[in-house]
Structure formats: C-alpha cells, structure tokens
Image 1 (cartoon, rainbow, N blue to C red):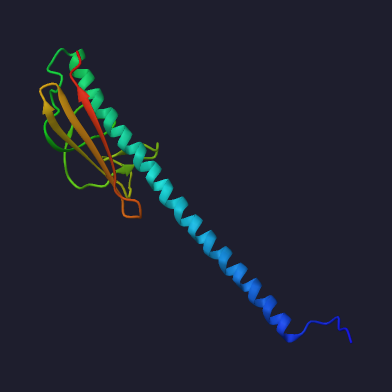
Image 2 (image 1 turned 90 degrees about the vertical axis):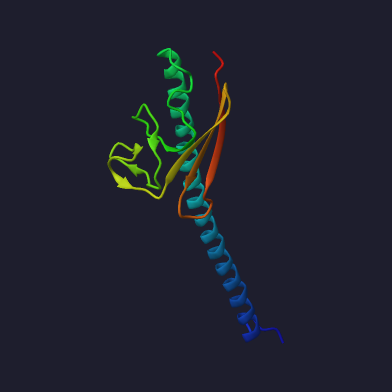
Length: 153
C-alpha cells in the first residue's frame, strides 16, 4: 500500500533539517556582522596611524625648509599629533574627537573610541624611529605602525 502523506517521523526530520539550516545561517550572519565592524574599526585605525606618520614626516620636512636641525621638535618620548598643528602635543590618554567636517582632532567635535600615541626614539644622529599606536575598545585593538625617518639631506 503506497501512501502519499508524510509520516510523523518524516515531518520531524524535515523540521530538524530546516532548524539546523536557519540556526546555521543566523550564526553565519552574526559572525559576518562582527567581522565587518571589527574591520571597519581597523581600517579607521590604519588611516589614523598613517596620518600620524605623515604629520611627523611633515615636521621633519618643515625643519629642512626652515634650515633648522632636521629633528628640531622631534623629542624622544610619547606625544600626540593633530592634522592642523605644526608641533607635537603633550601626551595624554585623550580620545580623538571627530568634527562636523569628518576631521579627527583633540579640540572639537564628538569623542570617538580611538586614541593615538606617537612614540619617538632617536636611534642615531641621523635616524629616528616613529611608532604610532592606535587603540580602541573593541576587538582588534591595538594597531601599531613603525616608521624610521632619516636625515638624508
């Protein structure tokens, strides 16, 4: 005798398979969302680190233009840097702010989750090591970048 209706066991198996598929999809979507947020914070941190290196490099280059010592103002220790400042700032564990134009700074705007520490170390008379550390409160923190600047003039 052939029956075209589903048995109770077939229905239970089908529900189990569908449940496993839905739960697996939900777990995958949650994981992808978590990774996406983590990567976006890491991307912002990498741009903030690059900006820090460029600001210190600009200070060195301005010293050459002004015909002063190439490392004038680039003292050993921890510092803050800001895109619209020509000098290093005194270090404090202050979070960066973002203003209405999208610029990160310490003066105005909304506080962000990011802090930036610039550490300068003289290696020799003609070389300094610049280490930038960006920290934030989520997974993936901190991001560290290191650059060596030289007196090649």
